[in-house]
Image (cartoon, rainbow, N blue to C red; front, side):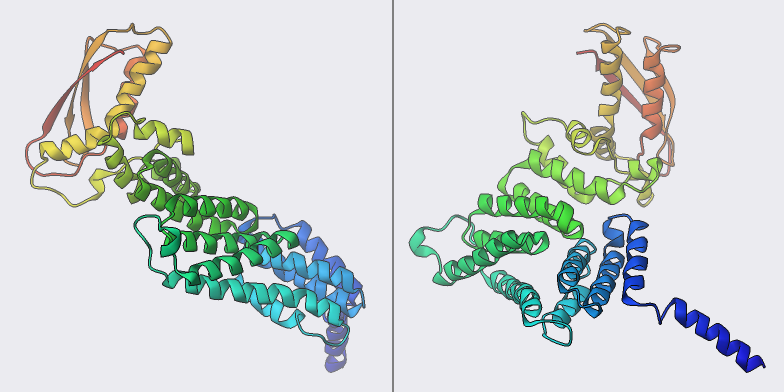
Length: 386
């Protein structure tokens, strides 16, 4: 009796899952897709669901519908950075089989062949030695021309197929080849174009492309553009952090390029560039390092170069609201605690009760000096309304 009941429940379970017909599989997969946002995190999951739809449509003998579903699966795998799943799917659907015509197999065989070619061409491009300056026509290796022509053909096919991930991959290889000829400007443009395509087609690859572009721009001396790109990359990376943790999540790239910008006259301040690119500012938490025996003037100067724009910003806002007048001068005093925090803030003339005073206080609360031992350091900073 017990065995009979178990057998009955097992049959019910199989009827709802394993024994579901192709039409039911398609219906359930589409319902699941409707509940999954089109994000890169869900890319591989959505790809599997579209692959399931393709398999079911293939069993139903509806090859156009199956091709469409498989194509969507490839796009979703690209969105989720699921290259191995993409290759496995292409390997299966590019072969003729039961319920799968030669025409359908050939359609995906072209995709598989193009991906294999672009991977091979990319490996070849990486072997080229980069030139420090643009080469003359007669100095360029003939192999470079051949590789560029082959990559161009794949790029044009990918564009015709509206296969964004493959299109972007071809552009990236073209960029590497142009870099090998010493044409850094053209290389940057190719990476930028590929990154724009990857915004929708391959978002995970987009960040890598943006980083490559920013490094090349820095190498070219285009520091403003490089800084804004690094700020954009950093903002995406730390976007899910709390406001407090995000505030002190300044990347090493921003630190390095900002130092170069400060040495170069006639360029906007780092805080202004970062705010325009990311919508917020980040800082280094100097107190996160090791404890010093004493706090040197050089170390204090490094902190002030990064944080003093906050105080200048307070004055600028106060000037816009009419709380202060152009030409007014203030002298701010505070002490640096051993844990690196600013305390005992005073201002001459006094600004207590004004929005300016609150702004100064909030700004100083953000300061983070290196931790140190010994006697407390005092700071005096003159500021004037411009």
